[in-house]
Amino acid sequence: MKKTLTAIGAVCALLSATTAWANDKVVMGTNWLAQGGHGGFYQALADGTYEAYGLDVEISPGGPQVNNRPMLSAGRLDFLMAGNLLLSFDNVRNGIPTTVVAAFYQKDPQALMTHKGQYADFAALSDAPTVLVSKDGQFSFWEWMVQAQGFKNEQLRPYGYNLAQFLADDKMVQQAYGTAEPIYAREQGAEVDVFLLADNGWNTYAATLETRQELIDENPELVQRFVDATIEGWVNFLYGDHTPAYDAIMAANPEMTVEKLDKEVAQLKALEIIDSGDALEQGIGAMSQERIEAFYDLAVSSGIVEAGSVDLGKVATSQFVNQGHGLDLKAKLTGQ
Image (cartoon, rainbow, N blue to C red; front, side):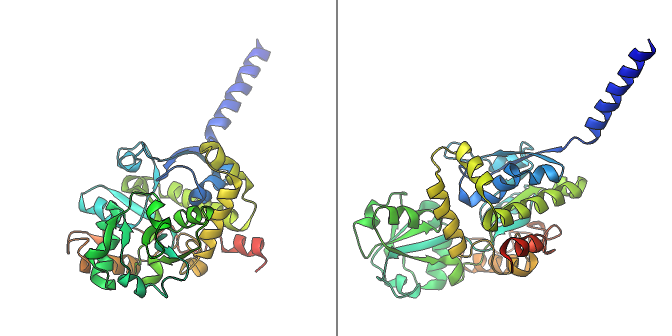
C-alpha cells in the first residue's frame, strides 16, 4: 500500500511539474500562403526559438480562400501578420480593438516594374503610356501616385495578376510586389527594373504584427516573448541557417522550392525590406509614432483616408520593440 501511494505521489508530482512548465499556446495567422516573406515566423517555429521562449506556436496560413483578418478580432488568432498601415487605420476607424506591436518590414514591398533600361527613374514613369494596377492598389497607393507623384488616371489600366500584357510591351509599367513579380518575369526571360514605392515617398510599414488590445492589457509578458522570439527568428532566417524555415515553408506550401525561396530572400535583402532604417540600430520590428503619423498625413493628403477619422494613439504601441533585441545575435552571425 505504501509503495502504491508513493508511486501515485510521484505521478502526481510529475503531472504537476509538467503542467507548471507547459508552454503557452499561441495561434498566429499570416496574410497568404507560406513563403519566404514569412520566413522569420517559420524559422522561430522550426528551430525551437518559440519553444525556448515558452511558447507552443501554431501558424495558420492565409491564402486565396482564407481571410485571416477577421479571425484576430474574433479571438481565433492571437497574432496576425497583416499588410501595411492602411489596414490598421481601418480597424481603428471601425472600432476593432487590435493594435500593431511590431513592423517587420521597414519598407512596403509594393513597387512598379518596368523592362530594364526603359525608364531612367521613378519620376519618368509618370509619362509611361500605360500603368497596370490592381483594384486594391487603385484605391490606395495609386491615389497617392496621382496626387503627389504626377501620375495620371489616363495611364491606368487594371492589373489581373498575369504578366502577359507586361511581357508583350516593352513600354508597359505594372504594379509588382518586390519579392514576387520581378522573380516571375525574370524566369520568363525578361530583364526588369524595380522601383519600390517606399524609396519614393510611400512611407508605410508593412508585414505589421497585430494582436488584440485585450491580450496586451492582460498578458503583456506573453506578447513580449512572442515579439522577441520572432525577431530572433528573422535574424536567424536572414543571417543564419535558414534550412529549418525552408523545410517548414515547403511542408506548408508544396509549390515552394529551395530555388524559389533563395530568390525571395535575395530580393528581401537587395531591396532592404526588413533590416534597414530604424531596424539597423533598434532591432528588426522597430517602429515609431512619428512615422505612423507621417504616413497618416500622406494618406489624408492623398484622399485615401478621411481627415480626423483615425485615433492614431490606438493604431500601434512601440512598448515591445525598439529595444535592440536581436542585434547581438546578428553581430554574432555576421561577424560584424
